[in-house]
Length: 413
Image 1 (cartoon, rainbow, N blue to C red):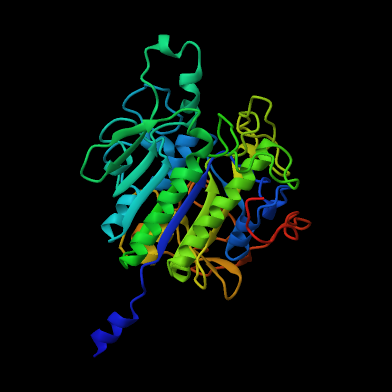
Image 2 (tube, rainbow, N blue to C red; image 1 turned 90 degrees about the vertical axis):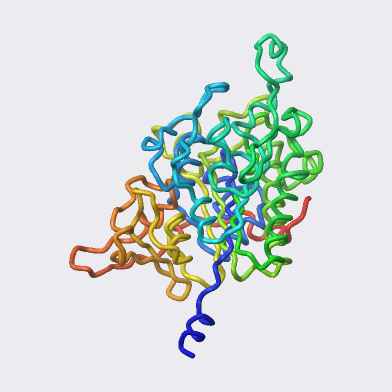
């Protein structure tokens, strides 16, 4: 009887939806004081944790590598964005990724959108733990390549969108060009993400889906359904943030419709600070909030500090990759770069840091914010005596959402 009780009381493995947007600044969302209404994203933050000191790398590849492996990018050789055609770049096959960890723990895994961690067979998402994927190998910049007058003379192959499944070779499926650029989230990435969530929920299988959302990244082209459609938004950049909010709302609605709302961890963050200096063609926008600098100013905080939020209804939370390992009780990770356990409890509203109970937690992560290590930064670490002090997770004084009273319902307008 006791064994039956233990089996019945065993926690259900939570699902994970990781939404990684591109080049969004700390001050772009309403909940961070942004001027574009983002009711869906604001709701996500208000129902979970909004991180005010979440930091990433200053380029796409290093940030995505750190998230995937829990390792400093310099350790895996992914400390910079690879040049087109560079070849064997990205994660080496022996790196142990978040997707592999969760797959080994019995999860269904999928990636839709941007990978940017390897462009050759053996280094694609389906080679690194994902059961299925659909998206791009490198950067959304490539959508504009075929429109350049001299592209044909370059000798390069036209950029493609790829797909693959575990155990099979990935293959190109359609051109990546300016025709698909403004609608890729609407027509492909979001529907595929929603379909995966519903399929796995119906199959009663825990899932991990990584959504590499395409915006805000050059070439900047607003979706026709959002371009100039609302007086509450001021221009193309704002329209793109407006669509982003709506797409996040679609994913949240899909989780609820699938009956998985109470057992799904949802993460939303960006791979870099705001890319206002990347935007061209007369498009302006992007906010680092009170922080100096943006994408091209890595000495300054605006290049590293960005939005970050995580929601797991009714549960306590730890760090990004350590959270998933501990919550699933899958044992020690293979990664040598792990943080001590930090916990934020909804009941107390406080962050705590506790002494490791297993040796795999003993090595503190030494990169501020690459892996939701803002939890480390907002908690006091345990002293050698074993006693822990606590520090409240508080909102900076004077920070309010400028869109909190506007358009509280998610819509396209």
